[in-house]
Amino acid sequence: MDFQTIRKLDGEYLAATYARYPVALVGGKNATLVDSEGKQYIDFGAGIAVNIFGANDEQWKAAVIEQLGKIQHVSNYYYAEPQVRLAQMLCERTGAKRVFFSNSGGEANECALKAARKYSFMKYGEGRSRIVSLKNSFHGRTLFTLTATGQDEFHRYFSPFVPEVAYAAPDMEEVVRAADGRACAVIIECVQGESGVNALPKAIVQALSHWCSENDVLLICDEVQCGNGRCGTLYAYEQYGITPDIVTTAKGLAGGLPIGACLFFERAENAFSAGDHGSTFGGNPVSCAAACNVIGRLTPEFLLEVQGKAAYLRAKLKNFDGVRAVTGLGMMIGLELEKDAKQVAAACLERGLLVLTAHSRLRIVPPLTISKTEMDEGLSILKEVLA
Ligand SMILES: *Cc1c(COP(=O)(O)O)cnc(C)c1O
Image (cartoon, rainbow, N blue to C red; front, side):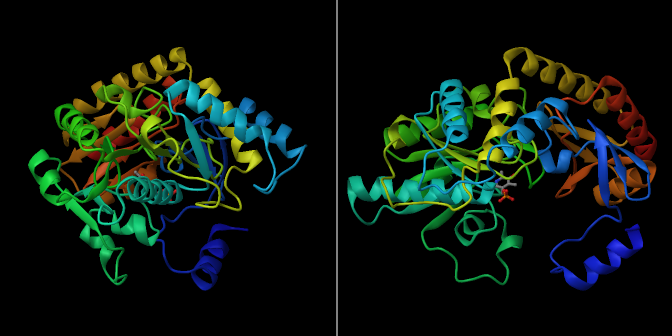
């Protein structure tokens, strides 16, 4: 199908939820993608921090195809080896005790929020169901996670919302006031993605962690975007010197197939029992086999390379004309610009570079395997557009 046909049919048959760029991507290799008209792009977006190993990665493909050759889906009424392999890997790498698998970031957070309410209910009974979430956070599109998203613009039209969710700035006094003695959990993104790629200050995250453990309030780290090597460590919280009670992740975990994971650490380990939560597709064997390949390859050596690439990109970007600030952590990069970010993203696309925006910022989240040549090509296009 040529692009005009795709665009026409999209406009006719798909729910009008997306403001799309005028491109249909059809293939590629690593961080070099191709559209339906044969035009090439350097990929600084990775499908929103999803395609960890870029497009068409040989090892990842082999892991997926191997599982497809066995079975594509099994019900959670039965045991499944790819699930236990992945859960064991995640627990051994993080110190988590148990994992629940779902299909998306929103679902992983939904699971975490439900588990926090149950944990508190079993221990303290009613009246402690409040979730404290940070202003400018993003946690998903289900009604509970949308409620927990601390941005008013997402809250139009969809009321009534889930009760007992309160918002606070990343400030201890505000958090304690929002908790009001009846919170079961605080949910944070160590690096806020959708609201502009802001890394939370280390001091506040540590203070939060301390306050949570003193008050038996569960600390949930939403690592849907900043996890899975994105920030230069397997999970971003590692760089904050804390141990959360629950970690949620998704986007990059399976390198491009749908998956979500909710990791329970010691305090929250037994929050759920049989029948409390479930998912038909959750823990899909193909997604889990893909994720085993991803986690298995995010070795300390690989993560060091990611840190090196991040430092390289950041050093270059900092010196570009038109860049006011470089934010975020590792390969999760925000750019505060003099020009309008949306217009910059459109101009980049025109010249063959895919970048994302996050609020008023440009967002750069390339495949972690991006080559030096691809980085340089992308950087030179961006430099031209920003000048
Ligand atoms: C993308 C994202 C989500 C939602 O993930 P979906 O897979 O779209 O449901 C939740 N939290 C954060 C931090 C995200 O970046």
